[in-house]
Length: 257
Image (cartoon, rainbow, N blue to C red):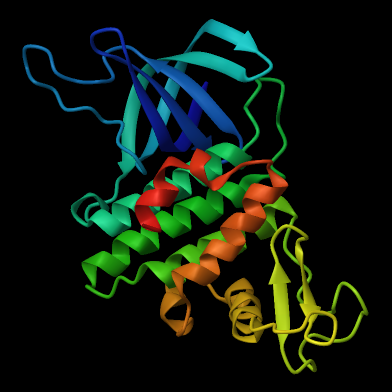
């Protein structure tokens, strides 16, 4: 069988083999065993499997392992379709791509051969666009991490079906746009108006969240004022839904230190 997917994890195994995880075009998480995937050898062959690369693989009929976590499939042939050119040369962009990969791995369902649904394809689309335009912004020398992260988080939450309510106060039902100010509560997953929660100062965040929902990845410059601290609110919201602590996201502290 042929699969296409983005590399979000690669684990060296034995002397030259790799176990890699790909977010497949279907939106599921595929696990693959790649013989000689680390490269090297007498010819010093480079590894094709790098973080963020889009790979096309042909699997063998042999299934190495099958359990509730999905199948570990053996790769017969590999072809690299696309890879980031500039991300690895910018430390902030690399940390950001690592965070993308961790969030995707935490929220993507494992692939099983019996699955044929495409209902989660939006997860692949969100990740592939996020990586492509992150790399593109570096090429154009206009990279700023905050709008990229906010766009990816918004698209990810939307495709997961857990976007916060952005129209009305969760306590009194009043319209948030008409409120003097609003407050976002990640642990509750909603906004409240300033009448229900005094001292609120998240109106700008609400406006940018609504804007990012409607903004394409290639229009990342249309999110002026976005900050990493605002994206951090969405990460806290994500972690609450998936019963995680931010310390469990290894790249979180690297990006937010």
